[in-house]
Image 1 (cartoon, rainbow over the protein chains, first blue to last red):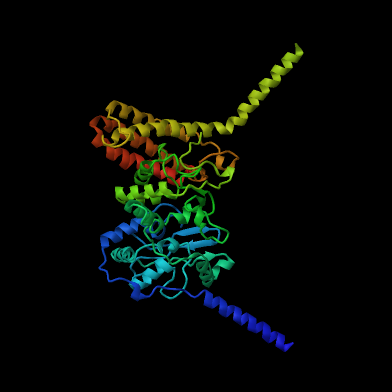
Image 2: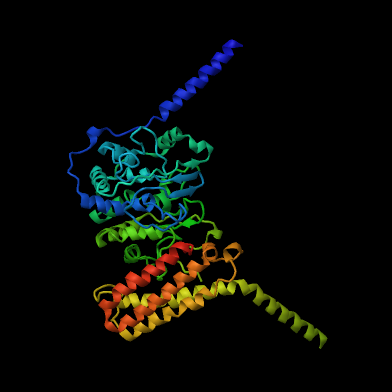
Length: 323
Length: 157
């Protein structure tokens, strides 16, 4: 009997050890970073391309934590809440405050957060922070972004801890999710594509992180590569996010000009407006150059067409009339 | 004779009944029509006029047409706000109107008034010319559209 107990204890210990090993945070070494004098203007550009304010800007003090109003896009005190099927996430403070924000972070700290989803203390960050997409960015763009963030106002503010449902509370478990779904690959330009298409692909797959909302996910919350950007369930749980491919239910009836124009002004070809959570995204996209918006549009038009897999009760696809 | 009367009565009730069944649909259809056919189509016209001549789909600027289009838009909000009597988000009706409209009725109506005043302002600027109208349409009117569409409208899909 005693041997049995020891055997069970042994198995459990082995299991825990295996778990801890498998879920070890994997980080980039500081030696990988290029020598680079940061370009703060490009950092600002990446700030808009990356949509950082949409999550990290503090909500209106009088409003609820999920009120869309954003009084100051450059006040990155965090505190906004994201209600998801996994529980409620509270967005962190990324102002340059050394205690409450990221003022004390080194370059490699920031790169590892953005590209590996690992905090300086060595803990995993939840993939609500879209490092799955940001891992595609270049070191230079990320270092420029860090430099720009460093120019903003430091704010003393500690948002609440995440309030997640039970299995997801085990932060270490994210290590398993990362093993399954992260490829640690930066963006590789396709030599068969034009420079414009490659730029569009970079902006969409990297800082734009469009897939995080616009791509379908499997039961484990991982992206389905063959259905890239073909639409998915809203991250906050209700509603449907449109298909951006030329497949059925997607953007086939929109020209590249239509797409670029919508990103610039918010107007759809029917003169409806990109609404809901896309409003803030569009406001960020409006800060990009005409050329970059055009590149994004051309890239979307070049995607393999995937039909929307929505149910009949979800309503009509983007660009289709509703009468 | 009685059979005819009976059938007529039955048909009348059916038609009557169907009309009432459509009752909840009517405000939805009506408000949809105002937004799509009146605001949407007029905005399309205005924006086409405000494009650079070299741009695709640009049409020559016509101050009278622009003013009329903006005036048409400014007449929508008063009619529009009356079309939200019952909380249709709670009903089995297909609508883009979010429950927030009924939770924040006062703000919803304030934003509608905003569209009215801003498009009326744009209408008064239209005779001054294309370059004067652009910042009012894109800066003020479009901004106002966004406020409601962000808070109160289910994205169209």
